[in-house]
Image 1 (cartoon, helix red, strand yellow):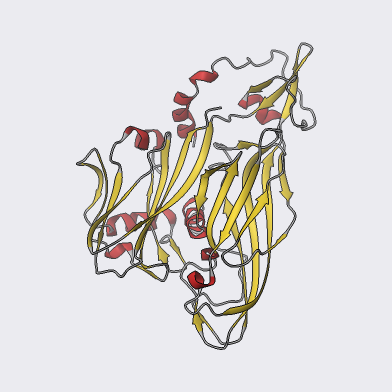
Image 2 (spheres, rainbow, N blue to C red):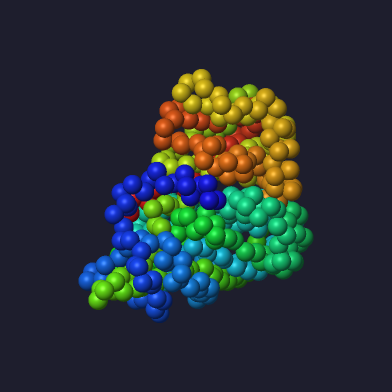
Amino acid sequence: MNKLREHLERYKAEHDGRLPPIAGGAYPTEPSTSPGPETPEAELPAEWADLTERIELPQTAQTFAGFGETQTLKLERVGCAAQAEILIKLKFKTKAEETNAAIGMPWAFIRKLALEANGVAGIISCSGTVLEARSKVVYRCPEHAVAGTAKWEKLTESTEQTYEWVVQVPIAEDLRELQGMILAQSEETALSLSITWASEAELFTKGAVEKVTGEVRWHMTLFSIGSMVEGKKKIIVLPDLTALHGLVERSTPVVAEGEQETPLTRTSGDLLRYFITLMKKGKVTNIDPLTWTVLFLQYGGNQKPLFWGSPKLLIERNTRDYLKRIEVQGIKWAVLDTLLDDPARDAIRPMALSELKTVIGVPEAVETGAQIISAQETLYPSGV
């Protein structure tokens, strides 16, 4: 990620006036309280790295709000927020008749998870299945230690089912470079996670569950803010906060077989990763990218720099890069990853490209409700 850090320096010209390092060196203090207006702040990443302390902070558990409902998890105003992890446990019984669970379970329970900062909810806004697909890419298809007792497909009659799983919310792009952290330790900052749960009809073919109970536990990874003294003046030392890390999902209806397109959002900054899959009908059946007839990125009307006449080649590359195919309980993804080889060289900057879109070749007739599901992972200037 060092190359990515160097690449992002082009966004930091306005920060050239930062305070210089102190000749005598900085000394650590206890993590500061919310800085008041009388205490100057400075982004000094090197000094901050010496002063900071990593904090693993559990939060108060909440009761599951219910299918189709939305609940909000407030983030503590402590240090800089780098990551959230959510442990979810649900118990319920199926009704008298047998039912099938949707593909993507249990991550499909989360229709949308949104990270909100001061009322802005577009930083991270995606489903649980997209978050799991990203986790598989970043960590090379890890095994999961936490799992419930429920089968992922067919559920038997009148049997108590248990789903238990962990969702990672990547506020920073990773925990080494920490690009994209958000300053939480400020009276002006309001951070929260909003979870919208899928409905019974979206999750089960017959909507046949009862006696639902559940709990949502969550945990924050934060880094404290230090301070140092220059002469007689105390300075709050901050890390590099010039970037935000985004992960945003979109869906596009598919009306027929053949070439179908879906636009990309023209955000500033760099496109890090792009995830795309094709759902044949709602969230019930996935059309494997291995069967797609074509896949390409297009801009400016006819420019096609990334073109796979056979998507099998990209899926084979994905499988080599991530050690397994990227699949979330039946949902198979194709992934464009600019971080693998040379991030600065391979960077894609959506804001600079007009008519930016992805085109896939749908190999078969589809029913009403078919969708292209895509997600953009971006690192872009925060404007601070």
